[in-house]
Length: 425
Image (cartoon, one colour):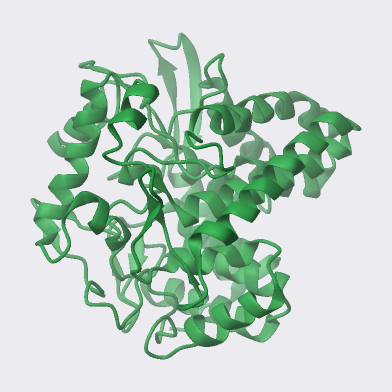
């Protein structure tokens, strides 16, 4: 199916507007408005989804883009924390599994207001994209102090070993829920995907039993993962935020955030990069164990300023490797030569087991930006072309088969509209 770029842009706008949620929140005592990921399956407000929505909306509706940011910041705690899900209408659960999962991700409550988990911290990038469109300095003055508070909360509360990398305390915090990169820490290597899915939920259950006390959770050390995707995004956004503070002439904040970014990148290179494999891997536990399974996370550091030799090796040995990530519809979330690779998601009790093979538009968006940054414009254009082809073939689906392009998961999935930014940037 051939679809013009303008047709895709128009369909993206229609998708985002169709997923707009408005109403009055009883617990917040305020009107709410946000774009949900999918009105038929994911009805609440997710952190990194809203950041992606804002990036696409920066091309289509700047006021609505800013609203996505302000809606997230409304739920920010005084200490700086921003939850990964906000239940504006906390009585509206989609189904029993979603209800159960949300309770485990929150302090014990029958009707939680939000979760106690984080998601990949890309809100600074979303703000930067919005600011680049209209140079609204008042918007920066409004949001930057809140963003600084958020990133400092991450630095102060999620870096138990002080190395500049933040730790996640559950698989769901990376957004890559059942990625095989967690099989070792969960003890599910070689076991069924059902066991792996249940193991992930056992982590959030233990977190809830600790009442989400981070000190106790890190002392127990059962899921303390320095995730490559999360930290690549964290480091990138510290630098973006530093630059934004430069825009409002706050040099002290800019320097501090830049220092945190440099420290994080040095540790990422030192601790997570395997010279033998020419690839980045997650590490876990206080003894920094490395589990060498090749997932798309190992490509994500391309968004950072890296030595040219490392960039070259990642691109030529892995990204362009027909046995690993160069699928007909790139980029699969697990290398095709990994035993855990599965292009078709298995369903457990009606819910798909995610991030073990299919292609996702949001990660393509990051890889495209990284390739462009390092001068691989031809390779970036090819991924954009194939991403557009996915949308033309299957619509704005949640994820896609990397061989056939068939769409899976939710229909009219909001962050798949990121293809608009890939086209227009």
